[in-house]
Image (cartoon, rainbow, N blue to C red):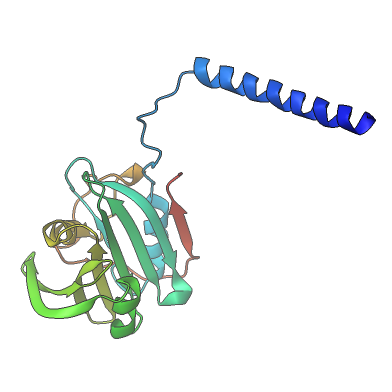
Length: 206
């Protein structure tokens, strides 16, 4: 009998807690249409990467309104791999990937199996290779010592827009496109002096 009373009391307590939670939810203001994915500030990570990488680490400058940086990382132990992920205004994914790793393996890894089409796309006066895949399409630029890949679910037009905006100049705070002077022509990462620095990463709050 005592056991039944204990169970009954437990259920009654849970009912009271649920009712209180429902009241709080109803009366506390909240925006059901708010986007839970926040932009990340990658200003610290890119400085770290630019100091450590033996190639010009790039980020976009001057993208149209509505593009948001959502993830960033630099892994020195993995071929000085630089990653910067964005969402377009249409919520398509676009990322900048750079590394000193073997190009053939690296491109396949970051693009999740995309393959070269044999075609190129002119961006900023340079020919970027077009790669197509089931998950991501990509634009690839092979420079001496490093490979730059702009990939994502967005169409090639928007991948080209990202590639054209790349510069090695430090971006404005908050991860948003800024007005810092460009250190390189559009579509071509610039130069940055190498030095030792730790790996760094950040992602948007979900």
